Image (cartoon, rainbow, N blue to C red; front, side):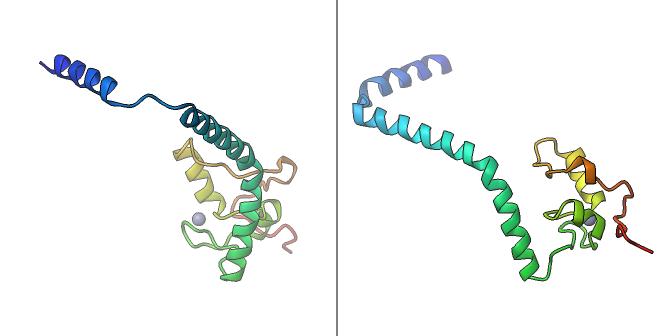
Length: 123
Ligand SMILES: [Zn+2]
């Protein structure tokens, strides 16, 4: 029977596995602390990473090009969101389709109303 064999295996492991030493426990706690620190830093480093990514895209001549559809991201959108990697349409699709996906940082006052991202000072 499955349950019985699982129980037998668990009992086996319990007797065959060595107990944790205090050093092991300390290491485990320390690595947990590191994970926590990383999570805290992640918030700040994300913005730095976006800046780095934007500079890399600039160097590769890809800045201002939507990474999904290849369309030119409007100047208005880039002014409001200098790290934008997608056009308005693709970003909306990503955010609507994948709730877990990292949403872009927005400045509400500068949110472009006109989709399509026409330059703000277009004649
Ligand atoms: Zn796009």
